[in-house]
Length: 57
Image (tube, rainbow, N blue to C red; front, side, top):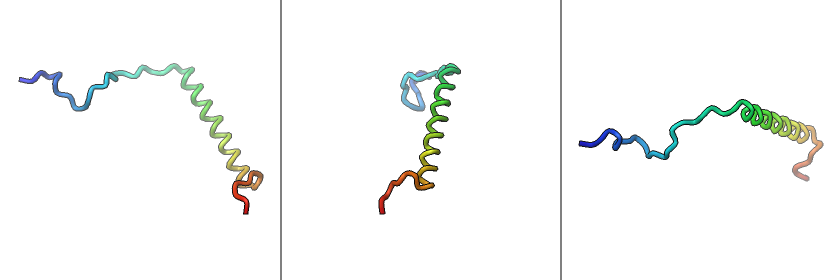
């Protein structure tokens, strides 16, 4: 008779629990994404208005 711990749906990789991240880490990451989004938006605006030339015709 097989033991109950022998039968597993997927391979055991040792990952069981993800602890909640500190608020400070989450806020730092969110502010980084916000800054990146603003820079990308400004670059797209500069390209759309013709201040930055991508292709020379």
